[in-house]
Structure formats: C-alpha cells, structure tokens
Image (cartoon, rainbow, N blue to C red; front, side, top):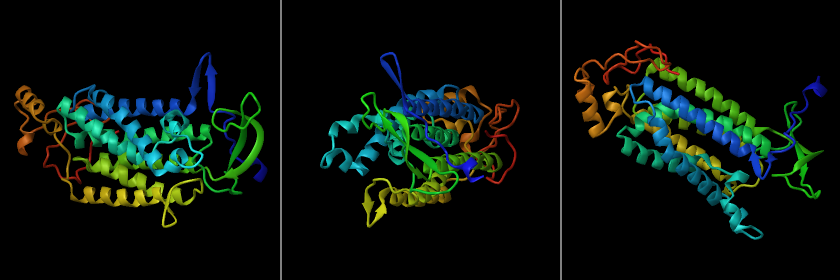
Length: 336
C-alpha cells in the first residue's frame, strides 16, 4: 500500500515552447484564475442588483495593480535574492518566474479596484463582497502553477502524499529548475504545502458561499471573512515551509503578516455595518441618483421600502433582495 501511495510526482516541466512563444504554466493558471474570478464575481454582482459588466470594468484597474503589488511585496520581503550578494536586480521584474505576495496583490489591487469603482459609481465594499469567493478560488487555481514550477513546498517528509521534486535540466544538460525538463532524478520528497493551501482555499470558498447564503453578508464583511480565512490557513502553511525567506526574530515574515492582517480583518468584520446593501446602496454619487430616478419605488437608500424583485445570487429570477434593515440572520436566497 505504501508503494501505491508514495509519492505525488511533480510535472516534468513548467514551460513549453510553442514556436517562438513560451507557454508558462504559472502564468497560464494565474490567467485562468482571473477569468474565473471575473465571471463568477460579475454573476454575483448582478444577483445583488448591480449592472452586468461592472466587475470586468473594475478588474481592468484592479488586476494590473494587484500584479504589481504582489510582485512588490515578494521582492521587498525577499530583497536579498535580487539585491544581495550574487543577486540580479533585473530578475525582480521577471514576474513569469514566480513570486507574488498575496497581501501585496490584495492591498494594491484594492487601490486599483477603488479607482475602477469610482469611475463606475459603485461601492467598493459591496463589490468586494461579490468578488471575494471568486478571488480566493482564483488563488487556489494559481497554486497549480506553483506545482508546475516546483515551488512553495515544505520540509522533507516520508508521508505517503509527499511531493517528489525532480532535477530539471536544459538542452545543454545544465541544471535549470525553472525552465528545464525533468531528468527523472528525485532530489527530495517534501510536504506539498501549495496543495495544502489550495485545499484550504477551496474549503474557505465553500464556507464563504454558505455564510453569505444564510446570513446575507454585506458592507465589506464577506471580503473581511475571506481575508481572515485565508490568513488563518496561510499561517499554518508557513510553519511547514523551510525554503528561503526573510525572518523577523526567527519567524518567517509571512507568518507575521498573516497574524496582523487576520486581526485587522476580524476587527473590520465585527465593527462594520451588518446586513446587506440594497441595489441603490450598491451605487454611489450620481450613479445612485440615476438608479433611484429610474426606480422610484426603491427607497432603500433611506433605510426602508422595497428593493424590487431581482435575481437571487445563483441567477434564479424572482428572488427578492432584502432592504438595508434586513437582519443579518435572515435565511433564504441562493448566493453562489
């Protein structure tokens, strides 16, 4: 039985040359994740009473900002790799080689999303709730790219689900772990921490959908739950890794970040407004005025009245959306 289970193999390579164009698994899965997040997020946004296409318009700003932020966080927290002795500063720009810090991506991505939301006249907090499950699912999909890159793994292990890390060589026969091809030699067997994080992310995605469906979370609180849930899992994953990383008092910097961001997210969840926004409250400024002019029966912006008949969060016509005063414990709805 041990022979049957041991071990999980790594892919033989992470880059394929299609003519003059290299197809990189890491970049491919990041793109797939972004597409999934945008499509699902837009569906959830429409189900809440927002306009179709809003998430894509905001993503045009948020995605580039997020990629830059993720890379900046990675470089700043691992600066010796690029600017220390033997490092190559130019490699800091090679995002296709891997290395994105999720906290930097979320922080700077939020700045881009804020710009996009201001242009579209929609609430950033409300949009964050709509896209939160999709963002975390995108992160899970992106972890598959780490498997192809043979990165983000943990300490050596003998567990049956250990991950085999192969030697990879280029056409000249020289070691090239990033763009080379496996020669079949197993360097070590390690904990597949990227897989642990992937599975945890999927579990949190399911939890977010269930909580949102049952309690109708709004005002940025579901996004806060996503951040807190991710940080909780990431903290324990970091404890299993022993690859190169910046440390503070002997503790990996990502562990510190996980704790700090977790506390901030929980505090926001506890202090923010309860309930879910009405369709009018999804919009800000002139966009809200325009919506109320087109929907005179919707008095939700003053805390009362009907919000109209809308699709539920799985797209089923006819499900009503509660007003801003609906208790958070109200059940019903079919959020996806």
